[in-house]
Image: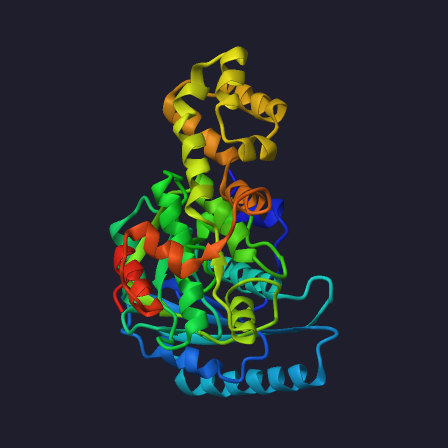
Length: 409
């Protein structure tokens, strides 16, 4: 029977091995970092290297990358970055902690982006663990503009050692700035969204931040590896993981992403911060009422499991009219009947139901609802409403959400 690694490399689109350096048999954690036009990458590397050392050996794979049509400025900076990393490696790499830069220049323009670079890094990590037959090796996803807490590596190691059943885990985060109103609002938006998912009993209420998650090598293989999307690659990958794997949360350490503005991708932290800084406006998000519609829909799952076509019609007709516009009855009926035919217990029904109505559909409905009768509102306003807060500043409200989500800053 082929190993999980052999299956991955034979069945899925994976990049070829790029590193010929021997692999330590004690290698247990590989931190992967896509790096595009990052003159300050050594701040991140130093932050990881300064961490308390775990019992296992660690590698940091840095994929310095750009597309074939990148500007001269980007190409020049990336070569400087590669040279600086190479010098740093010679000086600071040790048997137990190695920094390995991976040159990935002139990527075909249609594929160039963070997804491609993250996949190069994570595929290479998979090759490294395959060479020592370590399917439980931990692949950590990080970014080139983040800092980490001193116990970052130790906390990750301890979490997976204590939770042998866990296949993947998100890692607690807090943005570096406490004064940048734009990033405070954006982080609040992220935390409000997850708290709403918890309130409506959505089972995959986890953050999807590219610099703040980890997976076992075997989990990465089972999921077919990272995608090459030019934006949102982390969201799409993690949604697959949430639906089929056992996922935990590492709240005993901290990742500190950069609060900087950016226009590299059409959505995400950098873009949201740039827009807010330019427009000087409040960040808007989905109102309580949109989530209430989903909560009502999810509350009817026990009814869906056993009812016939006529009862399905009656239950469907009781749903919010906006939701009925979003999900036509014939599509709804066909899906529910399919789930009924393929499940025997309430637990199986619920699991398969949410594999259908997953994070993509939740996000899609929330956007649809705000185009069809519901109005987006200030994130500070609705975030305060959700937790019944009377705090006046954005940072104070955010701090309450961090505490609620067990983030220790």
